[in-house]
Image (cartoon, rainbow, N blue to C red; front, side):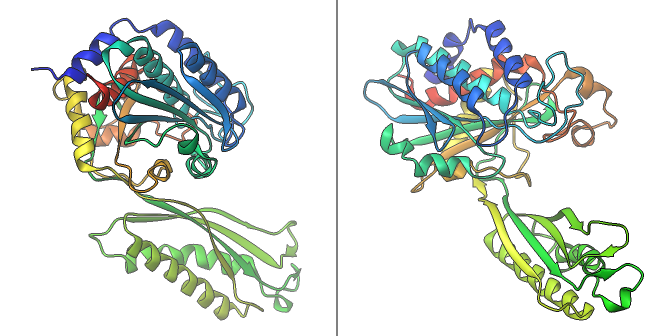
Length: 412
């Protein structure tokens, strides 16, 4: 027997304006905007929300958008999409590829905005079928971990409504037609760390008069790989990535300093603190061994919290998704090492459900090497790849997942 939420969702999305939504997606993909510069994207979303009857505001937390539709008694449900693009040069070859040099929607946020606009319009058009308050949020700066908190600090909930439940989704690699839920931990915490190694500069012909920070930084890069392999138990998940190493200006100049940028992925605060302590210890030890004139500077930068679904909330959404999208379409991959700032919206412990929608085009998936799901998953373009290109056939299903999730609480 189909639940009221599933029946209503199927009715409201039976005749989606797929062509119009695809046009919106192509337009957003052509015009990507970096974090906190999503002015055009925000305007596009706000215009559609106003057209659907939402009370709408722009400029929240710099470039955030919010629209509220109050529709009688009932809970307040928040639907969220992030809007920012990445500093990636697109290599998809799509006819609607990015027209902004060096900037690309390589993470699918253009698709997220399209899904959100479609769900908001469908729910507004069918408001006689549900009761409550719908809060729709276009969030800036997810990629830098700033946007959600900036919107909260700027009074999002005071200006509109404090939600009773938060709902969000993300495009992911995988064969079109799967919806990944985890009733608990689904995404890891992320921590950026910067290290400055101080040496003593000089001429490349006289290294004995210097303390070369580049050599020390190179030792550090190698030694830091042992933090996970030798200091974290095999049963615990963690990743340490050196994303950048910089030092020097000319071939024959030994610089006075070198810089290293790291990213940590962890699934518990205890492991995160252990890794930070190890990084500080190793950096200090290598600098001491090299005779550096002063200790290295180790600073913690952007931090994303772990994304932990409320189990009951996520199970309820997953059940409706299987009704709406079909048996066997919902699965649990378990937690991934990616990170999100979505939990910052859960101020004061608001329950939430966050899930993935697979988007790899069928021809790309079929051509990928491997014989099982995970082998192919590792072979197809992933988020942040210059080749990441979601299939347009996911536009309608992604609208249905958001709409049906909202109706789990709003359906009469």
